[in-house]
Length: 199
Image (cartoon, rainbow, N blue to C red; front, top):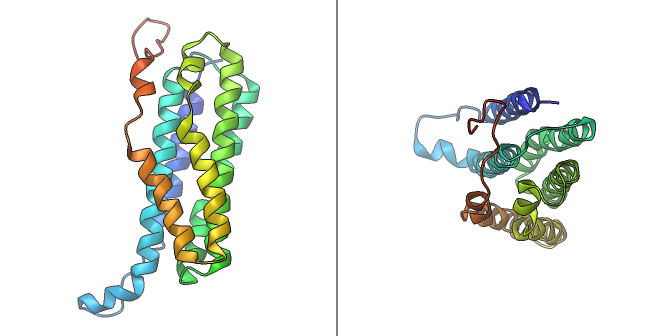
């Protein structure tokens, strides 16, 4: 089956997730710069969550760019990923409103961890569907960032109970890692549609 509806639905869900998060940014009480200080935790949480969702959108886009077809397990694996990402606004709001308390920061990391696991599952379901010699298999063959992200999320969750800001810092580190350009995507030719045109 084609992938167009899957891409469109996923893009729509991610756009809604970002919209929900930005609604948590309430206007400050007051008319000077000092009025912004109480909103700092909320803004910090929003920025990191926005970046994380953007990273998943980019990775999802690159992943599907080299995919030529999908199947039923792909649909459910994709919904599994979207489920965990849909919880990002909730854990972000709780973490921010708590002033970065240990349990909310740890739960924030847990949701990110599960999203990472869900993305791993989606990628490997697609790889099995396309075969070991496919472009997708070549793309996923050296997934250092994906593995490192899951390990760092788990580390951040544990550290959150010792120092919430240190745990939060680990999550920031994961985001920084994903800002480093990934040459794997440039090495794999793009998928083509039925007309033979690059997508």
